[in-house]
Image (cartoon, rainbow, N blue to C red):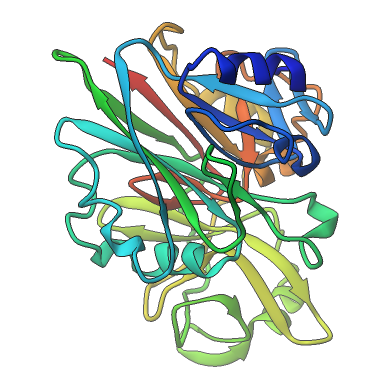
Amino acid sequence: MHTLEETIQLIESGTPLMISGAQHLMDRLPPGHWIGGTSYYFMTEQGGRREEELLHVQRLPLAVEQGSVRVYDQTTIANVYRDIPPGGFAIIILPAFSDVHRDFALRSHGYAEFALRPLMGWVAGVPREEMVTQHAVVYDGRGTDFQQGAVVMHCTLRQNTMVELNVVNIFRQGHGDVLTFPEDSFEATTCWVNGEPRRLVDYLLEQNIDQRLPLVADYMGTSVTVDLGVVDETAGRVTVLAPVMRDMVYRFAEPVPDYARALRAALPHIDPDQLVFCVNCVDNFFYGGLEGERLGLFVGPCTFGEVAYQLFNQTIVYALLR
């Protein structure tokens, strides 16, 4: 974590950077070789915390050569994988609940050259209590900020190096009711429960569902989690932080008796010199009671979504340079 003045000095040194923090600080950063997004919760070496007076700064290692920074909107985001340089990777930051975020979350599997080269990143957010009234912002490092665009830094690697992307997910699909949904969406009103039509809000209340547990689908052998966001009983609507997909089979995750302990147990032993990127879901921060708690080397912003080729929720995503 760095002060505004320290961050400005790092930018002026010409070092390629990824920066996250409160908007009032991000807005004061000068142009340079960086991209960033608004975040208010962080895992630090001293423990998890909400922070609005310091910025999180991640330097790219010497083995990484920065390429171009591009901005994508809803009409161009489908090119994001194809534009990654051969032998390289890209870092993407999307503003939460923007059109480009929705398109990426819903359709990325159908984008040209999906997952052929590493794409990592996160979804910028706002304070949790301001999700309905405030907008996340991302920055291209050239003096422009966006509420409806994704910023991407394309990077190349020196010879004999590669990036390895990893996802830590403590949740597995449970053995309860089968839920399916009528459309791809970030909002759910109706669903089918074991083939019977129901209002999702009613089901959550009647079954006393622990809303810390995500919906889980098996996607080609990978557990993909959908984190419940705002449950609006009056409107009968549930907002989710990753989209539910039409006709995909979901079940609520198996209970996790000790959330924080499960997270720690799932973290591997890694070489600190190889770690080049790490983000943690904001709901891990809250549901795991991580304020003041440490996760060793796994520090970085706590986000509204994590990208490792595709969008994830309630995970830790990290990258190693091999």
